Length: 105
Image 1 (cartoon, rainbow, N blue to C red):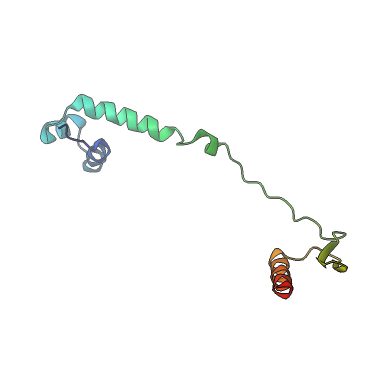
Image 2 (image 1 turned 45 degrees about the horizontal axis):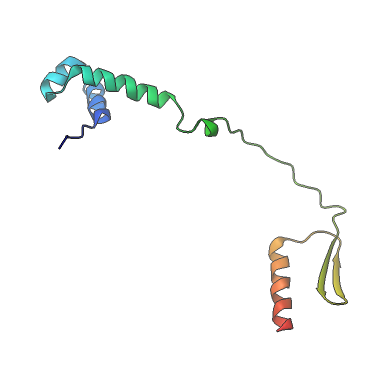
């Protein structure tokens, strides 16, 4: 069974200790060539965004829609309607719908 090596941890240790890759490789019985390879590979991976589509997203803020002239008519039952001068909040509409459903039962 092949042993997994955490190259990022080894490379962090080299940087933290401030020693050469060669000296660290000798001390830890690792291949210096492998340490150099993984240093290049991990540096290249860090430079590329995980999802290129996400890197292209831009925050957009839309202005609040005007509420003037947005009339709202609710048909509660045959022949019964409620006319409002503006569109009410969704939570209020849900409460009205729930109350009407309870009255119909």
